[in-house]
Image 1 (cartoon, one colour):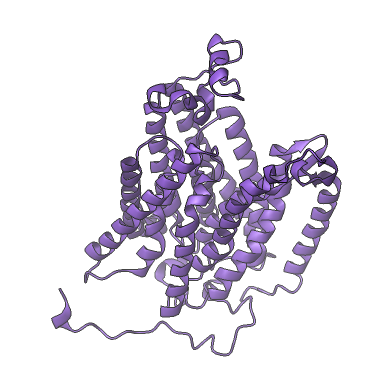
Image 2 (cartoon, helix red, strand yellow; image 1 turned 180 degrees about the vertical axis):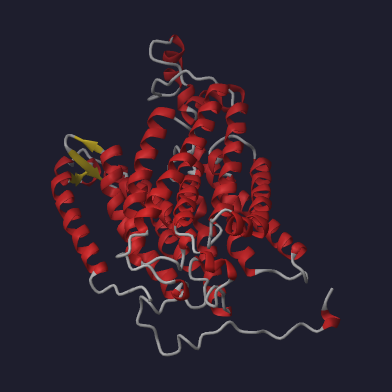
Length: 473
């Protein structure tokens, strides 16, 4: 008997209840921050010093990545274009609204209120990116109701993990390699492990692309590629740190792109490029430079990280993804383990190397801004001396480079553990029978959840003519 996938009651009920709860929480606990509150402005206030002008340009760039970049990238299946784009839109909007509240409690809560500004929206979009990366592991195999429930739980678990890691382990992770990419990857793998569908390992008629869907997906890749420097540099110190972050991200992405084209042609059976490689592997460099993106690692190190990350990502798609599906019950539909997991671990190792190499000869006094944990503790005479050179420098933890490296390792493994356990627990929740999960035969299709146009069934994977033998190299 086929499962009911009707959204008539399920989706409106979930959305309505959520909106009532959100309205109550926003009414009771959310107010404007200083720069958005008219009552706190006077004739001495310089409007151009408002945080809006520092954070909004980056916020817009991340918006494009979230709603257009991810949406188009996830629309690569020939009969799941609506699902890839529209469920991304729905899930992202829901996740951001919820993250403003949850992250606001941990990061922006003061005087009984969450103080709302553009920086809150930016932080919430990072939490949203976590959910959308995890969505890639279960793409086409879940209903919109399941996706909203996953977002509800994942944002909560992510926000608690983020708060604990940043406040107690105190790590360097400007580009979010640990707290965004690694967390999202292993959470998504935990979910798909529980939602395992054995029959899908034998192939599925809808698990294929078309000429048009591949073009749309590459458009998503291009949007992500162009705006990734803003994503990696958003939370770095303004000035030279942010400048380096943009440079390193661009160099890393450029290196991974060139390497991806070379590997795609070299390792294909007929020396042809594969669109899946262009859509995904080209982005690996943006992840692999993330943990060290604001450090003085040198441009050549960013280039090497981009190329190495690309190689690991490419080999992961070619060999590891099929192995995980066949032997480990992990059906990673979009290969998030390759683009975000493997590259995230490489990025962490690069960040540890950057931490170990950092010293005052390279950074000068700004060492203690980029690595705030290495600043002297309160009462240390050296702190007063540094504060004369760097006004506003806060007391640190007095850690050595080796000590900080150990904290980075601890953060990586603890994040993987929490994410995997949280994903597995969430997967069991998503298996509840009333969440409108599609049957195996209805996976990777828009038809169960959309009123599709009349030509939906006629959309087929085009069979291109073979290249004549005499043109092959």
